[in-house]
Length: 422
Image (tube, rainbow, N blue to C red; front, side):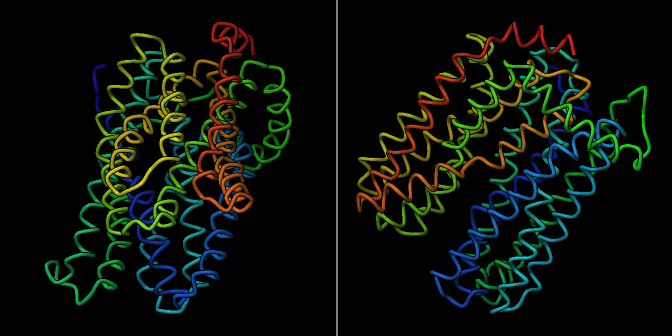
């Protein structure tokens, strides 16, 4: 693949906004929220944080198909992306101004920032068709490049932020609290800075029957209803979305619950942060290698391999005994995490009508937001019933098995033919 300015500019958005996923969502916000904003009450802080994540995901899931339909009708994917990107970056940077004990303000900014992050990704994903040359190979390569740069970009800033926290005086901060607050500002700036190339060099795909915003709002409701009908009519798309929802639920559960699982087993928190960094930096080259594998054996077969690998990782987690094992599993997760995400996104482009990418990616992202709903619940329920968190983690295997079964039923060629008819 020849990487031109347009492709690189699109991919750099992933480099920028991934810092929110690493430094904020996975890294500092959960621990800092409990120790600083919620005054150390672990039970209450866990409840507040859980509700915040659920509320943000629910809002995005409900809005995604509707916003996607409007963007398609008005040719405003890029404008929506810019709005949500800067909304998210501003809210993230504003976390630095929230004082100790002000958990309500912290939660509000986190929710709005999360909405900006997830909603921006909806329009970022849908722009891939305009950035590519329209071929499957082009979409595969560009999707992989975006995810790989996302992992390295988010990982690099997270590494700097971790060093700021561990050695605050080295960076001119009085303590770790000041360093973490400064980290939130760096994430906001990093995100905004690497959105600029997309603004300058990625063009909005043009449509012939462009509408005004008021017209599109009305049409959006009608389009949303029609899209539900079309998704049901495109049985191949429905089958893939069912498969995606199941196996990506398993993937997201492992991502979100891994740190909690490690602490439950008594592992040191600093070791868990190191493991998170390992996953980020392994995932960078692994996404590109996984894309090469997809070219050789077919992208659907590559997805089979990734699901199988995650199944083995889940089983291995049942027998994990020490931090070394945790590091090994972090490497294994990094090998397939970005690959399964990038391959899923590019495979989906094969099955949907190209001129309705926004609305169809609205459904795709809606399922992505509803993902990690069943998994954590299943993990918590089994852990409670058995009194053993290991059995809870092992229960996630069911999601990968069901996802594999549904994916086997997806007929790629039939999906392409049906999409061309709409």
